[in-house]
Image 1 (tube, one colour):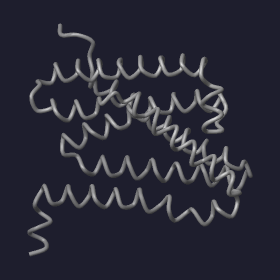
Image 2 (image 1 turned 30 degrees about the horizontal axis):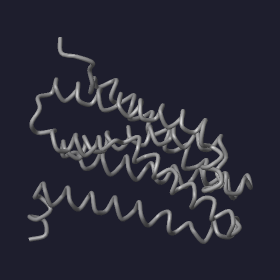
Image 3 (image 1 turned 90 degrees about the vertical axis):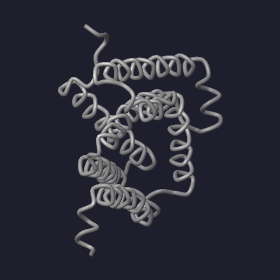
Length: 209
């Protein structure tokens, strides 16, 4: 009976997505004791502030794009979908540029609220844009019912994030910046992988020919 259930495509995909999500949530939690040994409570607070700021920037960079792709994916042909993807990425880029311009004006206010300096504010916006690109890649894989690619990509990003963070915090003793740099590096790296994947597979186009 179990074997027959596992042959069911929808159930198999659901199990893979659930397993991948569980690992992504468990791994960062498991390394907390290690990080707490090397980071002071105040440094943990800065990392938490960074995560909040990063989440805010992702919301603005995303502009609801991944949800729009999910809603319209099955109603568009491939050419129109590619144009839609390009326009969404362009809109995310414009939103990110606007945020960068706002940082030049309001970086002092942001620092007062989050204790994140202008260098990391700029890097957080850039990272948010690449996070949107990765999210789009994962969304398309989910809609195409490619759970193995989805799960591997998501889990490997989390593992790379953690490994870089541990290297910078534990080995190189970089404190809270090591943890933040681990998040930034892994996010930008996987965003670049996703962008190269889009380009190599010609998953977007500027206009219909």
